[in-house]
Image (cartoon, rainbow, N blue to C red; front, side, top):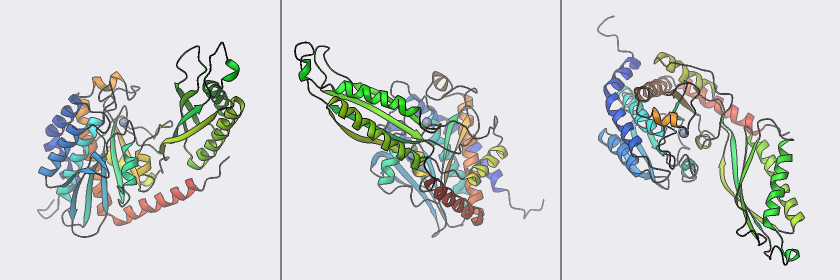
Length: 402
Ligand SMILES: [Zn+2]
């Protein structure tokens, strides 16, 4: 090796993150010890913003309509790719950081600082974006409505997990609040005058049970009754349920929703009641970009990730999918708990501040930084990622519903 041989930027990334590691771990431990639920993440947001500001990022505290969202930007030159590194920091009510969102901010900050050190004068914009309330309202959805994310070329995330993997897909989801209105009457003395809103809901749940037998395998239909009456001796004139519908195929899911609508109409007709339907949440399905997944996994190997597995067969739903509806993106899941331990469990809490959790932060920072450097170094690779994204999106949205 001669004196002129430049250092491999990926080795420099590893060195930078080694240097940062204890500070990132301390930040993560602080967020773990101060759990804040969706839209209340004041301390986590301030901690991450302060650190980014003191490291030369231009920080907007409160972003895209949410006070506990933020954006921290590092711009080099004019034009060039716009890379988004997203993080969550909300805890679960009563449970604390049982989904390990406390790892995410420190992880992408490590990545962002390592990238910043290595981009040189190559024009690009790096955006670190804090996204509140993933567990509750899905903060990314309203942030999108305020114009966030859509001008990114790529969006990347990290999440704690039991193995190393990326997802190929996530379930599109629509959640509805259903309210039936009937007529109250004394249940013993004048039942003929009453029209039961609860009867209507029970017919709805029967209808949903029958519908479940005639939908595609990946369709998920679940619901809860939130209000079913106040007094045993009064016909309930008011009943409320939440119904959630999911499928990997959004056009198909929209067809299922039309069938649910007819079940509601049928129940109202049978019980002489009426209903209102309010859509409360809508997530897209993830648009898979294999080339981006492969790049992230190649860097996971390079960075020494353990327990590497193929993409999950069964996945849930996420507000990140709504971002990945507009922008190619992926999330690297990294192990810090033993295999088989699921999110939202005591197992996640027990390992929240463990050496394994701290390793996942550093490993994720390395993987994301290396991935971004690959994309910045090779414009053809970024173009290929974007082209695959457009093709997959057209294919998924054009799918024929059965
Ligand atoms: Zn989570």
